[in-house]
Image (cartoon, rainbow, N blue to C red; front, side, top):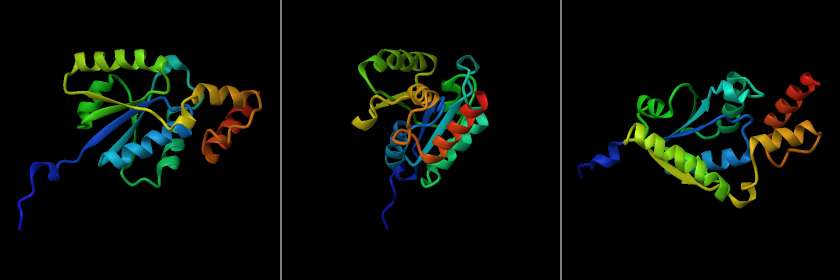
Length: 171
């Protein structure tokens, strides 16, 4: 019987951080693809009060949970504090970040370098979404919904319904 090499015993974990306010098909495209590349994907939902999210942290966690429940190796977490601390605490191997356009790259590159400076063990992997999602952002989805537009091509149905309910309460 062959002796397994060390790599067969290692569980590869990646963190996908973001506000996910709300989660979109672009986010889910990256989660699904990451779930094929890594043994465990942790969607780390940021608790960033300066952004004033539309959905609470608990609501965002539930919306993401429902969207990824078919992926057995994906879990949801809450990110407070520094990302590098969270990565080390969760024993992750890397962070994934989505790049939709060249304009995303400069900001994401700065974050990746800062994270590396804070802890050189933290690697960042940039992933591009499918071309059909390169224009998509949570901000744009919320604006379209706020103005009464159809968002069914951009978010799962449960997210669309939650967004419609949330916006109706604010009117």
